[in-house]
Length: 161
Image (tube, rainbow, N blue to C red; front, side, top):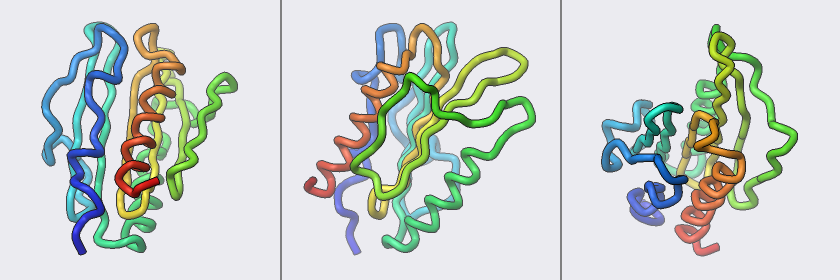
């Protein structure tokens, strides 16, 4: 079955980020580290001082494969690491996807540094995506919401919503 739309059209780019962010490379299969899916692309972004962000998109063989892939990948992405605090939803972050079939959002505090990271994992039909970013003065909740809305918008356009 052909994909609903080219995976390249689902990737975000630097135009969505605040000033002083840079895109590290063009989206490529090599930048999507998980070995799942029949198609995948990943891209990373960074700042000079405050870390970076990644966006990965994977395509499952069919809807059932994507549902299972989402559950497995999301569990892996949200697995607590030794130096991270619990995942939580910040009280001043209100965005909820109305496009994704399934999604999970959360933030965590890196214990040694106190640095906050936030991530989204979502399933949109046959696609599974992840957006992960360090939060800082250069990535506010408002900036993050803008990026997550853009991901939803790209997916909605892909499926004619």
